[in-house]
Length: 245
Image (cartoon, rainbow, N blue to C red; front, side):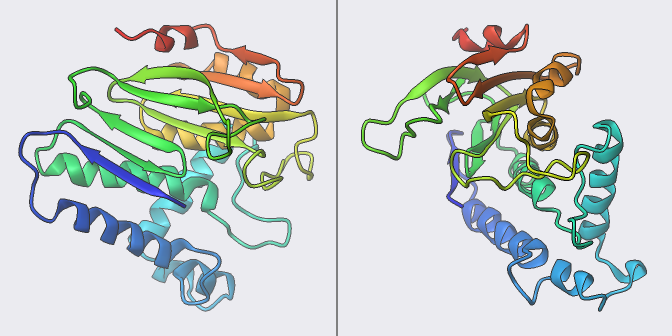
């Protein structure tokens, strides 16, 4: 997935970009289910007992279990074949951890993005809020003539989008034991940080049309949903993020 980092403090800490990209490489090597050498692959082969899992692996698994309980089972990293796949947790978690690395250097104004999931902090290069576009799932911006359906403005927030319009059907409903089937194409969630936004975006998308209702009741979160007919629904407070303050 594409990775983007933008730092707008006057002084750039030497080596900060290299450190963050090195961290993302570490995360990929540890959690990728596509790499036979990763820790998660070894765990799924039953080669590493639980007591010998790394601290980061234990943290991600614990956070995943916490999310499963908070979402009535709609977030579940155990696949139908019984393997552990933390991919739905790791991306947002890694962006959040990377943002903490940046903040630890005293940097205040930046954003970090992986594949459209974003953590922002402070202000942009002109001193305003960071602007984030929500793609039209029927005509993405990387296609000729693609467009943005909404622009939101964020400061010290995270935003994550779950959907099928880029990667096809890849989100599984662990409750109904099937792919979500009621026509939601895109669900964008704003949260207190990207880790929180990402985990609840994945779970809410798996809920189908009920996901937006779940997010409406979740304190500190707002969401924007687009269905297969192009109809959009937003939570009560989402519109406040559409105004540049």
